[in-house]
Length: 174
Image 1 (cartoon, rainbow, N blue to C red):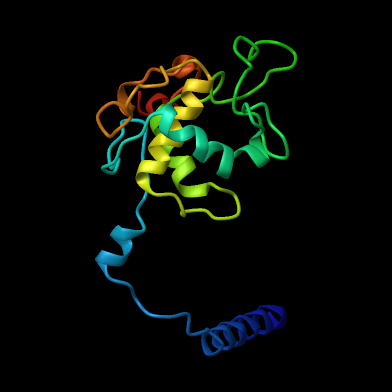
Image 2: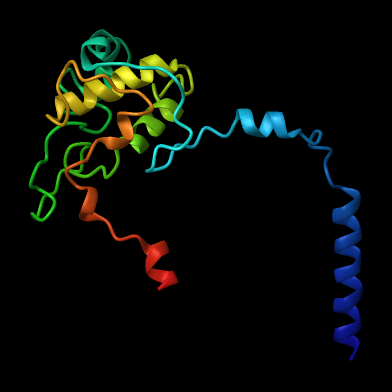
């Protein structure tokens, strides 16, 4: 009984101490601020921004902003390879690249826009992101070098490994 009382008192003291020590972490943000930071682009391409780009537009951008990590031809350097690996996923040494593994071109755009370049995420314009996406897709022989990518055309691209994934969410609902 005495142990239970001590535990209850200790719990109350810890709760009171935690409440008193709660830090002032800022202020409540409005819907505008939340909407401005909602950059997510899903497989269906909903929320793709205006803009456009081709692989031809992306060549110099790639060399300037990507090649140091991903290699001049996307073969990988300090960062992962982006090109190659076709047919390797079922092998004992799969090479997971945009061309062999990535299921949706729209989520490639999303990743480039959000996370690249590694040392300056969120620094690319939407046109630059479309151009870099086009360049990486062209390097993987998925689009032609003059294919214009924009909010309408990007979701229509069928990636080689589109059917290589199981939709766990849909499976749970069956």
